[in-house]
Image: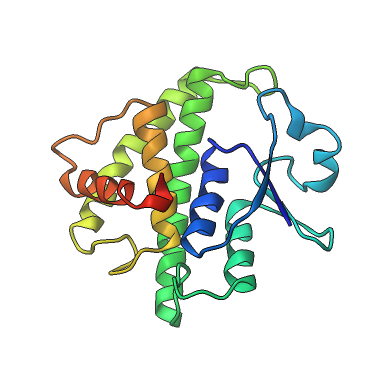
Length: 203
């Protein structure tokens, strides 16, 4: 199987971090998304949404969307990491925080960065005002995560999960792309990010 990706993108990094944590080595193919390679054949013929990452199995079946790919890898390669949880409560809690961080954090940060930077203005309508509004929404979301991390070492509880991978990547966009500082008013979130950054698989 092969993973079609653009290595620096958060979605591709999510699969890379996940696969490393469960001990699965993937053959990768770089897709030049800035040049629009993902929007034309042969990639567009394989992908249902024209985005990276895309996992192509040896059977020829294709799986798009990073969380869907992670779920496939987790089931196809049994491991003891339990990044999606084990019990019903664990799985539901992880899924809950995964969705919260995606919908209120990562996706909103994407919108902020894309609309402010206009990096893809050749293929989408960029609205700078919406970008700044999205940036403010992300800024307002960070204290919610800080409060949660005052209660537990990881988002879903005592153990690392896929929700933490998503949060780590969101915080990379927040700090790098949007220049939002994790200051003294967010001590739990800053300590959490620094802790995740020391995990070799997250580098």
